[in-house]
Image (cartoon, rainbow, N blue to C red; front, side, top):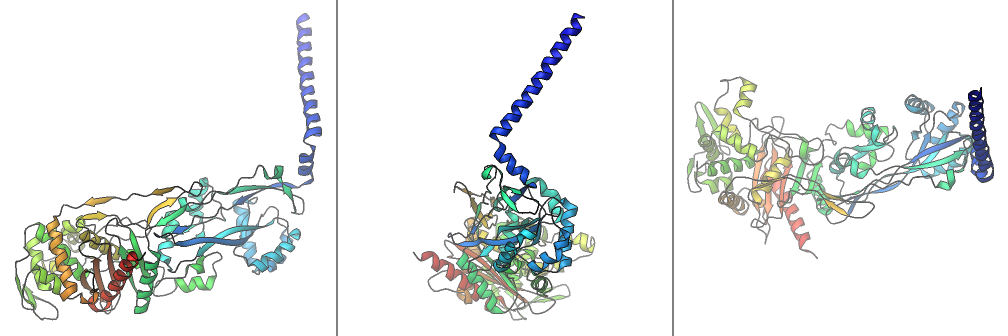
Length: 587
């Protein structure tokens, strides 16, 4: 009996204690938190709104801003809160078809009916102000001020920079754990895509008290619980904005498709890279209209196609330099060895012409490079051998991507015995295939960027640098700069061999096929090339570096369907080199 009484007393004490605690909490709430709770009780809901951060800016090598930010007014709808009877009214406010608006809201409902979905972005300021005046009639409708890109540089650089686009469903599934939502934009193409993680920043959060008709009554705890957005980090490029603009202008003036790649031989940094035709990034900035976008994607000249890294062409006579390097290193020729060029090279029943059948007479290596004698190299590839030729091509990076820091790069084709066996069948191809390869034709294909890397490696006498566009980034909070590092490989080739090749290239500009690239007071080393085109006029190549004894720039120019590289592409290379070296000398 005593035991039961003790248990009842203990239970009574516990119940009394709990009631006491609840009463104390009630008194505290009434006396000390009545104002905040009263505000919340008068409101219909607590709304959490994401605040988009300013995206990181993009600077050229000299500190010029190439990409900045500007205001973007966006209207969003929370499907759960929106009154569907106001659909036509909102559509009129936004100057958009009601069916399109209904589709957007329905899509948001299926994903998350409580999350805001973008109804229209890039709203003109006048429309935004009119909507703001009527916002009290539109429960669940939000106006947000975000950012869109501002392109303030002289150069378009569309293929390099890329653009922003709405996140795809596939991207959202894989990236939603990183804070992405269906209305977010992500980098699409180019540097915007490659460096998305650095540029995007971190979203902020704003908590608002909203009444039953969607009117904002205030912020939670006077905004103390809000989180400010963190700006994206700035991206620092190796690009010279002025040189990029000059390259675009020169290529535009040809009226043809093509590409120019200029590179720093000392570190692999891209100084300029342009591809024509290109496109206007502002068409894809903010709200993308259907017709301008269709004009871009249906253009038969493919302006979205980056010819510098995505197009592969026969390199033509520029590739003779690689054969010459292999022959010198393997002791298959010497600078003084001569071969007689009659204008026709015979192999079995085959006859291969040298410059229309006109002979060069006795030709040594220097003259062969200077005058681009085919016959010399027709002979040389049989001395070197197919396997060795392939091995040296691989050594210089042909047949695989360079690793440049923008997406979409092609690898090109570096033929080998295994490649021909697979393509034509073992024993079903002949030595005649090597004749075309010796002068950079046949199945051999390279991108302009690969040839620029090759030219830069000759210029610096054997250091194969990975080409790159970004040199580093600057922290948005601290201002500290972090530099990227890129791989470089020292090739097992003698300095003497590179000196011989360089002398031949200098002579080609002084007295040979590249004389239109000559610059008074600057020694230029260059090589012409013509890529045979079965669909029309040949493509015109030229590669060069300068100053020859201490190179600061290497450049490759390709103009499609332009004929001879010495008359079309060489003058463009001259202008690029002169512009860059002259600007470096100015204070």
